[in-house]
Length: 133
View (cartoon, rainbow, N blue to C red):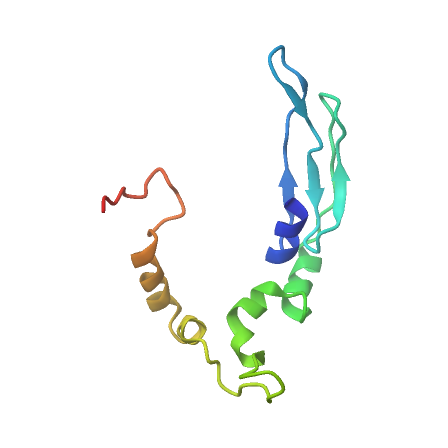
């Protein structure tokens, strides 16, 4: 799951998991650090008290986000409509046919407000209001 998340979101992912026996439960370990392209940079085993480290490169991830094409999911999320096909065998669509993406590019704050009407205003669940329906 961590490798897929790292690759799909163009970001480093660190997974921490306990390892060993605590007298009640056995924890399987395998904490790991995943590169933004889905490669595992380092992984612990099943023994308790293992430590793993990896060198993460800010310039490398910035370069990937700026210059990758097919693997740049963040870019495609905003611009996927520009490469979409109307139907099989037809030429690419000149204008983005997806209203959400057009709005997101032209009016990010307004689109955010529209999304928040469907979800919530904050990423912090402890301060998000409970809405009864």
